Image (cartoon, rainbow, N blue to C red; front, side, top):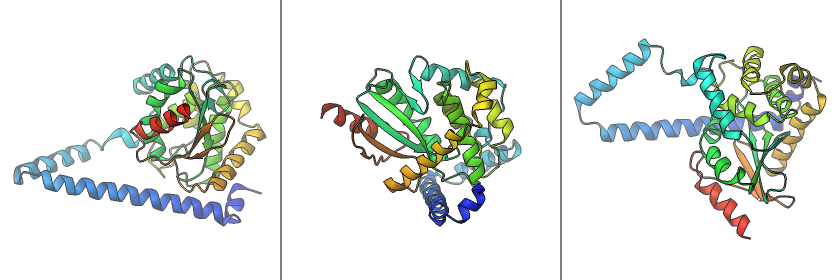
Length: 276
């Protein structure tokens, strides 16, 4: 059965994706409205308004911000991002979808969609502090799990998630995941192509590209994506990023964080488990 047929016969998955998209759009609209109110309150009159208009004109003339466009492979920007990612995870054990020492006392399960903008906010925000503060010293291990929410096409979702898992067969999944989020394009823009996924793989330091390409056909990776979605459904997750946390080898509970950029809520949960 094709992914599209499966999606049509699985209203729960389709409804979950649409619900997550609606929630994400609502959050974006709320944030935009809040920002607009703050702007109006801080305006000092016509002079400021003129300056704002001038800035908008400049942005339109230059094609807008490049932050919504996928980063081109083999460019100075891509090279800089690759160096940053390699430095972040260098020396930290990786196995399949896991980052950190196997015997770390606390495990954080991170459910994400590689095209999810809020996952990008977490991955490039709070997560970096967690890696340096807890993962590198061996106190925390993080598992990445797939949950389709932002990606419009199920087949594209499967392809991109499997591409990351294939890098995990060489202990490089987190390099790939970090690169994807750092170079994420605008949602629903169709930027995830074979060229884009191949370009990310080329940036992963030490990745055997031939083996990576071959491993992408491994059916066990497709099965892993399905198992992740089943686990997310069992936990009641409808949006990404979502988190489960607990003692390694023991039970887990939901981690409801108030921010994806501030590491404080995550630090508090980890510290509580370490002390218990």
